[in-house]
Length: 368
Length: 209
Image (tube, rainbow over all chains, first blue to last red; front, side):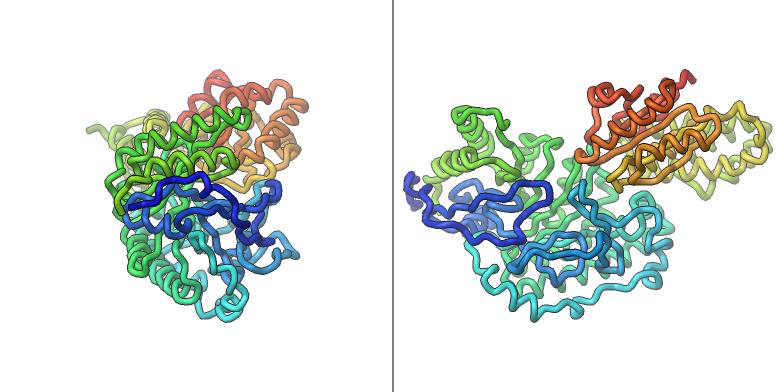
């Protein structure tokens, strides 16, 4: 029997550790993240949801100050090259806006965008059927694992869900190598598909090996890859194309995660809801869809499958405390029977507290 | 099925390897080059509509545009010098600070397929470069500015206003994920297309074609 909700749970018993790498360009510094006197840890709560049980509360996904501790150690060249380093060390400094990542790609940092990408127009792979001759394939042994392990000993001792994230998934990797339009055509052009399959096959091996090493050395709870499958209005490619070209390879990665008890999150921007069947077939556990997707339909249609939706339903900044609590109550009422998380992209303390309180009460009578 | 109908189907389905031969066959069968070109343009209109409605996706649209280009290659020597085929020159680029090019490339393909001569300025294009390109190219009737990021929307505004300051009568069309009709109106653009599929129709409307 679960312990009934007690307001004392929401009292701070300290703060979670803060790290200098925990910031985003263009966003204000984060306040300390208070640790509450919750009946179980955020890590344990996520585990319940992952295992198909009711959590104690609707967990918070996101980047910072939520129930996830993101982990992107600098030993991975893509993390460093794209300014997405989140680890225990000091902030990285850069002497140039262009940095080398895997496959010898040059990643260009664009300050105004707060992100990095490969400059289009001069792709590293001009013929996908010959990619093996055009780019060097990454070798995980080249990463400085010893230094990474030594530098992050305290970081990984967390009560939150420790999530290792990685650029890029299969589609994004193809885009970075070929440019977007050529990559898109290669996905359906029968003269190029063999080359794409060979690349994705090697990538799947690489990612599975990476997951295994992260599991061994850092005991991660979750693994995330970025693979934006959507545009503002639709998926980039059809469900059939996704099933044919990506699902078999992504499934190998998620299988590797599940064999090790690791939750797999697909970070995929755009209107990707038509591809959810492919996500489920590929074994995706968590997807935080952007707001152009139909949250209610997704959550209710797929509530009996493995996928958890992280929903970015946030109060307008002008809302009063009463209005914010009402929105939180409605959120919990609408989604308590579904498999959801709150995707906390600046939700604010009143809202997150109310989501905790209402969902905790909604689930307090659940039989474990 | 007539030869010209075959060409249409091949373009719509993106059979780029077969289009050139089909265009030759249509010419041999007595079809006029202009009629074949018009048929392919109509095909791309269908492709654009299907893309806008979510029936087909980015790869299918790109493959169709590539197939049309193969057909146009065959027709070009035959139609060389016939300026009546051109709707004029359109300058296009992704605005300063934004490295995204897929939306821009899709629009370029759609506009090219509908009869515009396209000048691609690439990505991360400063506002002044649009103005220079208008000066440097002949018969510029339209400028298209693209931006994907909310953070580069001010750059979109700057581009439109810089172009309008230098060429008040120049038609400017804008688009990109965060852009809306309201924003296009607010920054003084003449037109807005919500997606690449509908961009050609809007562009033609703006120049009165």
